[in-house]
Length: 437
Ligand code: XLS
Ligand code: NI
Ligand code: NI
Image 1 (spheres, rainbow, N blue to C red):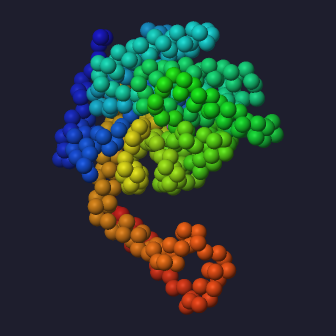
Image 2 (cartoon, rainbow, N blue to C red):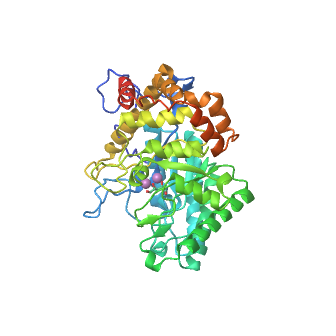
């Protein structure tokens, strides 16, 4: 193997809360047991190949700044294989067990579909060998159906049937690759599955096409025996002005409408939730309530910026709110916490990849412990339970069981004294939550 890409950076150790070493963990001890499970198994961290290896850290006003001494900038197979080696060195040093990729992050496109498949095949072989050596696993794969100019009008929702066919070919191959690598899941994020203006858009036809596309993916998945989970990743906008997978509720409705609900779970991303005008907590609760919370893209937006800034998750209270819901549903099964996050343009040195991921991991380690402590304390849970206590009465039970009609309820209401309400105690509950931070 070639020289180290991150010389002088050792495997990041756990040094405990007293440490001031920025390249050490103070709170994330993978073996520490929390609520009967190791932190490693609770958190199931994953690293995103695209941000870690391929994001040049450009913005709409300036070119990329990322220092990538291992990358010669060419679209060759050799360069792609070298990036894989660097990525696995990073995974091993940072102590992250899972990763995620798009087909086009790991392998450049060839001059036609067959050439692209061949290149992807070579890279997959290499990824497979590195997985084997390192014990690292693929949390999910996906197909990049948004970067190439051919997808300008969308992929599965393109006005061009030929683009739809091309996207089908690409998803087929990306599924093969994910299957070959033993991936635990496959994500469909509707990169450009939406519109810029309704003046040129047949919305219902496009939605029908997207559903057809997903049905074909499910059929293909079954035909090759791929057992991983399928996830839809909601996002309301950007790059389009409206995406059909705009939030958890609209995704669930879409899946139900097209008889796809059994085949998909949701992969919820924090910054997408906030772009949709929701809290992450809201999106997670909608997904979990439908039994469809599969995985999480862990990042965070900037409160002043109205786009997907994909910042590393550094908000401990937010991580605690997320982990409360994850613990509440009994943890992850196939999913995990994927750092779909990039460094700021100013953090361009390779070592910043470590600082960024360490920060995100520490945030979630603390979030996990806080959420566990809040659950063990039980005051908030008990408050919620008692807030609905009137529903545990005979009347509540009969309404919930669908045994009463409007006229019958009118009779009951008339015979009773007017309802008396109790306070919602929001500020008291917020203070209890804060006690644990
Ligand atoms: C973009 C999305 C994307 C998906 C995978 O905003 O978050 O990165 O996670 O295609
Ligand atoms: Ni994402
Ligand atoms: Ni995103």
